[in-house]
Length: 84
Image (tube, rainbow, N blue to C red; front, top):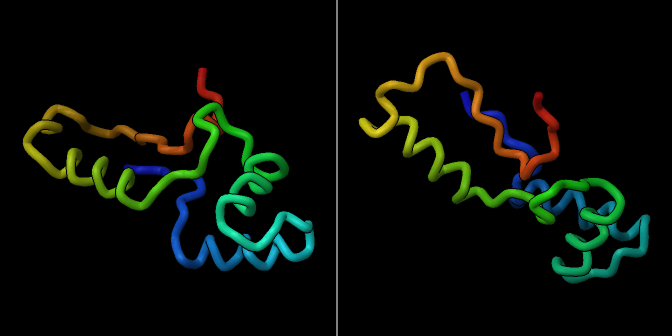
């Protein structure tokens, strides 16, 4: 299983563009992303995920290279979720 954090999709962009207007983050995506990172999404990676990163992990899991991986939940959240 792949559990992703916030991934920048068209829907996520639109949602944060609306929020940017309420929070005065600016209008261009780099400014909005900076606002999201400062006020909503604090993670060690310092950025939200990208769709191609999720696709790359899914391709790996579906490949013979991952034949010995069973019952795992692989988190892709830039470190947002602390795990012990």
